[in-house]
Image (cartoon, rainbow, N blue to C red; front, side, top):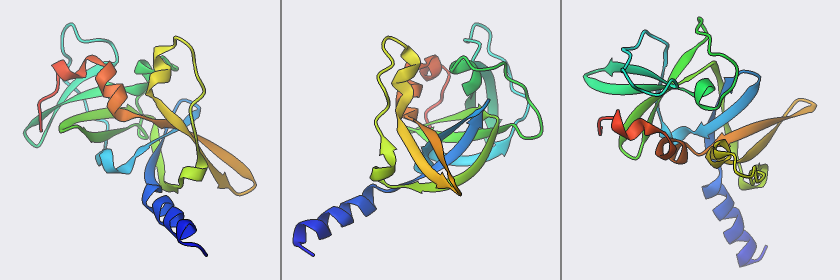
Length: 167
């Protein structure tokens, strides 16, 4: 094994990242686990007048006011329903804490760079900007396709900055 191959393997190991998988409607999405602070059940939120519809409101999380974003509404998916499986993923993005409502979380997976493909160009669709790539994992006989969300870009594109306190 040459020096270069050894280096490439080492780099791949560093680049392999853990992702939290969550569901929205029928699709599976994934976000970098390092951005996840905690996962909690959905509680009632305090609405903010004049906020966009995808911003459900805010919660008081151990003294910090945290905006709660419904990703189904943000991505213009099926109507949001809240049940016993609905969870809020508390994210820490660039020093800001924000909650994302998702249908459910399933597991944490390691994705190596070889399992990630660039996101297809979606034209002028602004939602496409939040897709960092497509991950594939073997699940028995089938391949599972995961939409990797670039949470920084998503936060930058929402009006959340107005509602978030810096952690």
